[in-house]
Structures are given as C-alpha cells and as structure tokens.
Image 1: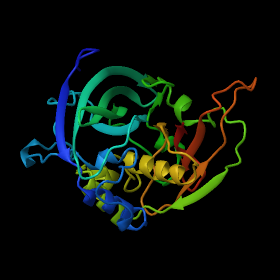
Image 2: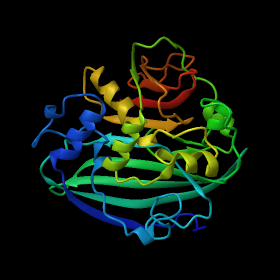
Image 3: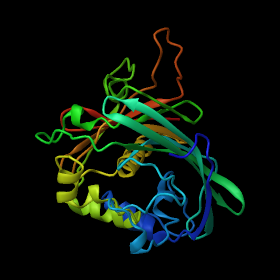
Image 4: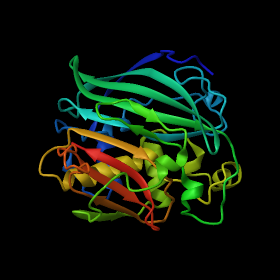
Amino acid sequence: MPAEGERRTRVRTDILAPGPAQAMLGLVDRDPRAISEGDPLPLGWHWLYFRQPVRASRLARDGHEVRGDFMPDIDLPRRMWAGGTLRALRPVALGEPAELRSEILSITEKRGRSGRLVFVTVGHTVLQRDRRCVEEEQVIVYRESAPRPSTATDRPQAARQGAAEPRQGGGTAATTDEDDVAGGNGGRTDPTPEWTETFLPTTVTLFQFSALTYNGHRIHYDHPYVTKQEGYPGLLVHGPLTALVLLDATQRHSPRPVRQFRYRALAPLFVDQPIALAGHGPPADADGSGPQQERIVEALAPSGTIAMRGWVT
C-alpha cells in the first residue's frame, strides 16, 4: 500500500456542453430544456464532465481503470464511494471551458468488523477563467472480499460500507467500527421531516448514469458479477447518483442556493427499490447550541435504513 501522505496530482480540461446536464435532468424526470448554455451548472454536476477514454487493456476486473496511475495501487478488491464534501464558491457556467485539478490528499488504513479498510481522500477543484468555482473532498473506501449475506435486499448487516464521516470544514474521519458509522440517527433530535420525496432507480436509471459518468463499475449493471463475486443481493445504486438526487431535492426545497453539502454513505441502495428522500430542520446539540445554519437531509431504503445522510448549508 502507498505510504501515508503520498501525493499524486492530475489536471483535466473540458468544455461544459449542455448535453450531459440536460441528460441528467431527464434522468431525474425533469425537463431537459430547463438548462442550456450560459446557465449555472448545479452543484456536484461536474461529476458528469472531465471524463477521459480508457483503453480496454487498462480496465481491471471490476470495470474501473487499473490502479497505480492516479488512484493508488491498493491491494483490496472492492471499491465504494464513502462520502465527501462539496463547496460552491462561484457559479460554473455551461458552454464554457473549465479545468478540474485533482490531488490525492490522504491514504488511511483502518480495521473494521469486516476486515481491512483503506480510505483514500481525493481533493478536486473546478476552475473557470482561472477562478476557483467548486471545491470538493471525495472519499473512496477499499475493502476485503469478505462474504456477505444475500437473502435480503435491505439488511443493514449486509449494507455497511465502513464509510468515512465528513467533518465540518472539510476532511474526513474514518471509523474503525462500522456499527458506529451505520447505526443510529446521528444525534438528530427531531425525526419529523420538513419535506419528503421518492425516487425509484430502475435498471435504465443505473445504465444512463453509468454512461453519463463513464463509470464501468460492474456492480451497477452486471448482475452475475455483483451477486456472485461481490456478494450483494442485486445491482447497487451509484453512491454519486444518490448524492446528486438527494442534493437536487434539497435544492428544490431550499429558499436559497446550497453552498455546502457534506454527506456520507451508510448503507447500499438497490435497483427497483424506492428511495425515500427527506429533509429535516437544523440540528441542535443537547444544550441547543448546535450548528443552526446546517440542515440534515437523508436518503432511506424501503426498510427505513438511512443509506445516506447529508448536511447542507
């Protein structure tokens, strides 16, 4: 495994054509014509851009690009999107060139109940006209190929991913106990949501998002692979898709633009199972002095398991 603190950088450029953003609107069942050249790109939607072709010989068994170039060569077979932070500094304009600067910020190994976990934190900055527009910390977790139950599609025991919890102001805090990550309500004092929505991810949804983000990870489209090789009961919904759907719903229910979105993945979501999206009021500590400017948003599986929790400012 690479040494702690190893730094790698990468720069990619792209012209932010409206097409991918319009396709994403269609994917979430909204009018693709609602966004066009010159409009601001929604927060997080830079994930649809800055994609580069990869030779077939450079693909690993799971469908991702082989490790060792930009992403470190970690000797664990399974990769999951664990969480991160998005910060909007200024609008990103569609139709204009942009640059994505990426850097490996940290590599941390922990041990959870399922075995070794390696967390890789990647920093991204989106720039336009040499101005910083979006800052991001993204956490990827690699884990062992331990067997998983496959008799239910929504069991927390089969779902915990050893996610990393984003901290206030950026960065992550990896846990060594997966129960600490996936369990409980995160200290929320008022479980009654202010708003709720439902999103149904179908096989077509997963196919379209994989195509939009140039994501070849087989857990999202290859049923024999995800069930027999990775031990899940069905196709998994993309972590970034869940984050974008949750953020999109949050923005539509917010009176002002979302400036920061911290989120962590707690449990997987599966194809053809409705996802409940919910927004809650600002959290407060026991003494009432909590971060009142933040609101909690969640994506829940049909059983009520919290699959993703976010904090918006």
